[in-house]
Image (cartoon, protein in one colour):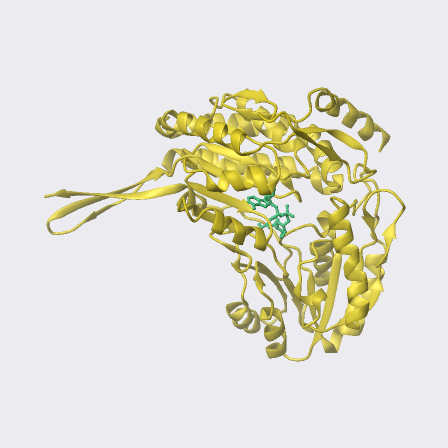
Length: 490
Ligand code: NAD
């Protein structure tokens, strides 16, 4: 731990000197208003550094820079874009330690998980780099009188708005395909965790990305974020965040007819039938809610367990939840670090009282840890029913709500009876049931007898209030590109 803290101090020194600046047209700039805000660590609430508080004027400058850079980037051969994106991936790997330590200090996420985040970010760049040369490929569709030729063109400058929970990985996930498609980007990262977005952008320019192709404007959602969604030169908004923010963005973007792609909240069920491999199901259920502090869109925050095995399964859960190590995020042994900030901490701990008022049982946790920082004990609610707020609302913390069911029909009804539909996890050794159940389960992504394992060519996204559109594979290009059909008379 001490070693990591010392290394972190070295990496933070430059931020302490200059603060986190915007990057517009290749220039590091403070906000035009001269305003800045503070970013603090959730570990001890200490000041990390100041951050440029961008507003509409900075967004306008960034959108103009992205527009000016667009034609050259669009027309660069895909094979050239591929080389640059691979160089970005190489540089991410070289700076993986810096990225991981800064991300942990900024977000409170534990190093054991974040040490892989930079490498996943690099993989995202490599995956889309390899697809850049063929991104514009189309097909020919001859008719008796016409030769139709289809192709794809990048849509133009795009806005990317990201949340605070895993800011580095999510930024790469949205920006890499945009660049591979030939779009230019204005990125507005979350105000609560701005460090690694700045490092990532610097890596990209040092790797040879032309100036203005990727612009960074820090600031708050209600000014910088809003201005980005309303800017006429920005053709599409890729947004990751809360469902209600997605709905605001849709309204804000209506006047300029923005194309939107939303990855939003979840209240994802893990459903455990009595014929499942219970040990593996237990491990996966624990991992999917208590890793990444439970601040994870795909977390399995509702456990639906069959009555016949519920006592045994809940006993196993309680034992494991109580053994989870809460601590300093830079300690390699820590499993759960502090929550991102005071307001979120108050929201998550507020559900302890709500659970009691609802009539559920706090079977583990339900406490804050220490007097400074936003640490909470991993928490398990049992005896819940699906109408309770703890079963319906996204808590976005290390908090699992356990609901019992009797039949498969009950399980399906409960699983689908929420506004969200991002992921689902089904544990059963009955193949026919797995097929039947997953067919009716309302979710964009479902894993059977597995925790969430991401495979980049597959579609990523949610249904209902969990999102609009899909990422991954060619689906990302569908969003960042326009189809064009040219018909030649024969
Ligand atoms: P948030 O919606 O509060 O903020 C996300 C981003 O939107 C921030 O950069 C914020 O500044 C910006 N923003 C806020 N108001 C805006 C506005 N009016 N116009 C434009 N931008 C605005 O979300 P959060 O609290 O940062 O993140 C947590 C949420 O993100 C959770 O709901 C979680 O489930 C979701 N999430 C979803 C996925 C997914 O893939 N589905 C992944 C990660 C997180």
